[in-house]
Image 1 (cartoon, rainbow, N blue to C red):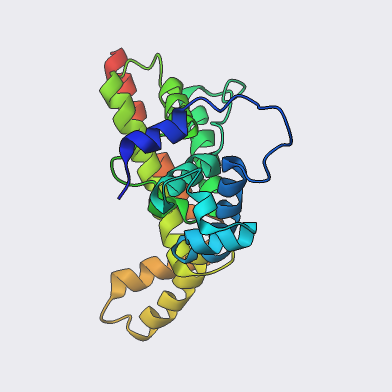
Image 2 (cartoon, rainbow, N blue to C red):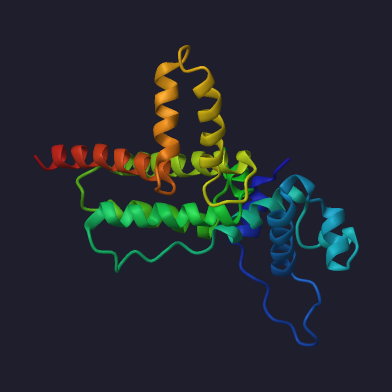
Length: 238
């Protein structure tokens, strides 16, 4: 079970002051970085404190001096994997272009660390990086006339769309940039043989599989979300 106060302390606490003498061979930063590498390579389910300790060359008990357990370690891994929020100050085109770039950067990060999708769910203490991403997304909508609650809901909606597609891509199990296309090809073949029974689905999958663009679902969904937000922003301006 995650101890929220301890997690908050680990995420937001002040780092220990440097001490005289040799630098410790083990550090929380090294533990987190190694854990991320292991999760990227094999998935989060295979990560354990014992395996992590063996990979680091230390005892399992040594790790508990830095983090109480895997739950708290996972929270640290999530924030480190997300990385600092992107700087959108040089993006031209207003809030829509800024949020589009924000979403694409998030998409790229989730593709680098697929396990993050399963971790970044539910109520939890957000770390500096995750909160920074939220701050950047909200700032992009500053001055649009939307209320704070509406801006928060907008960012959550965009995040949900990106994470949902990233999760689908991970579940597909393909190593290509667009595993959904491989799945579309399989479904198109199935529906071709059953076109009379599922005529609309057959036509839709055939159209999707013939598309030459990448990440069509991501861009299509973002465009529709932004269209809806644009209508709301125009309504507020009116």
